[in-house]
Each structure stands twice: as C-alpha cells, then as structure tokens.
Length: 366
Image 1 (cartoon, rainbow, N blue to C red):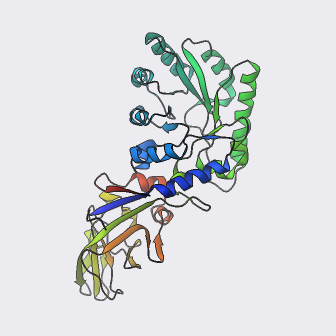
Image 2: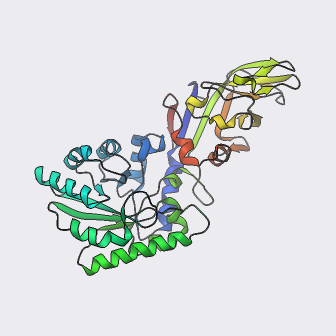
Image 3: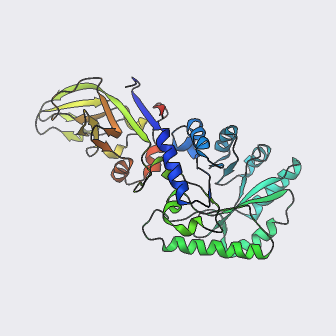
C-alpha cells in the first residue's frame, strides 16, 4: 500500500462501467457528466479524461472557474448554476455555454456578446418545481420570447432541475416533466427552438423513463457516476485508506480522545488511524463508525479528531503500526460504503466525497 498517511483511490474502470450503465438507461440521450467541485473531489482532470474516452458528449460545471478548468479537455462545457454579472465577460470570451435564469441575466450576456463580437450559446433554465433558480414555468414562455429578441445569442439548451428524483415516489417528478413539456410546446408553437433539452441527472436517468424520452435528448449524471445510492449496476468508485499509526493499551476507567467521550469500561487495545476529519472522516462517526483492519470491523471509540481516528482492536489477534486501515471501501469480505457514512452523518454521498480533504493523496487505477 502507498505510504501516504491517507489515500483516496479512484477506480476509473468502474467509473466507465457506471457511465455506460447510465447511458444504457437513456439510449436516445447524450451524456453530459457533471464535474463540479473538482469532480466531487476526485480530480477533474483524470476523471474528465476517463469520461471523455468513455463517450461523454460535453461536460457540466457549477461555476465559471470550474468551467474554465474543464475547457482544456476539448469538450463543450455548460455552466449549470448562476452566472453572476462579474463573470460574464470571461465566460463569453472562453466560449462557455452560459446559463440564463432571468431576462436580466440574458440581457447582460447579450450585451457582452455584442461587445466581444461573438454569438453566445445560451442555456435557459426554467423552474418547474425546484424553487431555487430559474424562470418560473408559469411565465417562462413570455420571458423566453423576450430573450429571443436579444442580439448575439443562440438557444442551446432549455433545462430544469428535479426536486426529488432520489425519492421513491416520482409523482412530483412527473408533474415537473409535464410543466417542462407545456413550456417547450408553447415555445415550439412560437417558432422558438432549443438544440438540447434536459431535466434528468443520474437518479432520474435510470428510474424515470419519461425523463429520458422526447423532448429530452441530454442527461447530466453526477453522483450516480461515482456510485451514490447504488441499487443497480452503478458501484462505488472511491476507496479511502489510511494506516494504523500506533497501537496502545488503555486501562479500565481511562478515556480516549477530546472531551472524554469514551471511557473504557474494561481494558482495551486501540489503534490510532492516520486520518481524521481534515481528511474527510465525518465527525459524526464519533463512537459509532467503523474501520476495517485485517478484514475485521473495528469500532470507532472517542471523538474523531482533526488528524486521527481511534478504533478498538481488542478483538484482533494481531495488529501493528503500518497495517492498512480501510475507511471507505472493501477489505477481504467486508466493506464500508459511502451510504453507511451518509446514514451516520444524516447526509448523502455527495457531501461525503466533497469533504475528502486536499491533503489526501488521490490515486487512479484501471
């Protein structure tokens, strides 16, 4: 094992398999992987190159900085989030597909495009029920008609976000699709057409057939690519590993960690793991998480600290400094999944991955 204190290992072969599975669920759609926040913390350059080789059509980012980092991959990049006024000039100059969530934003983009003597590809976002960003569906037709009168713009995409695609009940998703279709049909009747329509991220792509059929021709998987909420052929691509840094014996009555949140009721043997919350180990694993050492589950005892996590290894026959400690991933017949961490932290996989610290070494395998 690599002797970095903590290492995040990304399986690019599994990433490609996940990509192909999602693509198979939406055969009439092209795939625009979402690579925001440095590909969910996994490394945008390596992940982007792997997905491009797998057949990605274009990439999606959340911010201008992310889009500019993706642009050298050689595929078109669309910003999904808000494009604030002070970033418009740079986005136009870099030929990024620019989002417009209002007539005001579209007008600013148009003016900058005129100033730079360019035609900007515009992605118009409508709000079909997310309630966050976008032109409300009830007034979208009139707003888009006004945008269509602005110079130096071409309509690339009409898109929206699902509010609850990960939930078992898809009734609200179907309502959002119907709202989208009503807007699209009304715009078609006005002679206003978009090259791409997309509403589905990963969950909707594999579980809601209506989200990958006409008028939709693009999907934008994010977390599913990396194995979030996998109940199908999408498997976890990330392992987080560290080492046993020290082995100690703790007498009965002595405490472990900050705030004395664990007090030994009997003598215990402990292993100090070389990773803590600065590396992405959730503080919520305090006194309830587990780490795999020599293929066995070793419970976290005491409070997870910034640089270390202490586990109980009393039940192991042997354990030594330098032993591999698997925080996320498989060891032998045992595994710790991102879903398990998510349940302990009352969150989901995106949050888990994005919390893996910058000092953790990334390693890529095929």
